[in-house]
Image: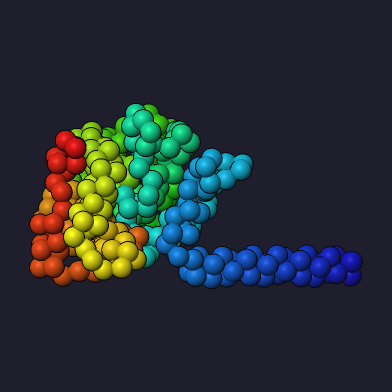
Length: 268
């Protein structure tokens, strides 16, 4: 009996040590995530998703994807602005590490955003409501993904996502929205060139200040394309970017006049 009591005490001591170590690791992780810049978080997200260009031994780490995604969502950085254009068949832009498992991880990132941004949203499918419950979240995402057998357009229907909501996401798009996102990503390099040329030709400020203006206007161009050039919506999308630009609607409206249109970028 004495030995049994001793063993129990040892087991409880060991368990408490394990729990303490886990709590300590968790506290360090929370601190690390909170202190990282948005750029650092996005680089970490790419590694967690298995980006072979960012890691010597790429492997999908879903737990890390969810933790980093949660932090970015908490900061208000929408999935579409995390620098991961993720579309099948978009040669030269879609990552080579795209696959069925990574698709589900991308779905989870989008679902995190919907759950946080739209907590009162009502999906069409009852089981999709699980994304709003942390205990059911991963199971609901797996159900929606169905091992890749359910197309993103079907998931849009299951979640009853509006066009505006889809514009904030990186993976869950109806076909028409996916094509629209593809147009934006294809035209973005040309938009950057046209915006840069316009600033360099007329702006007499130091180059560093010009660079900051170019960065803002490229971000604004992306928000404008996704926000249908409507100042209020564009201002909202601009705030969801990596830099979280906060500009009043009237200022956004004035700046939109200085940007090339999507069609202009596609023609050039």
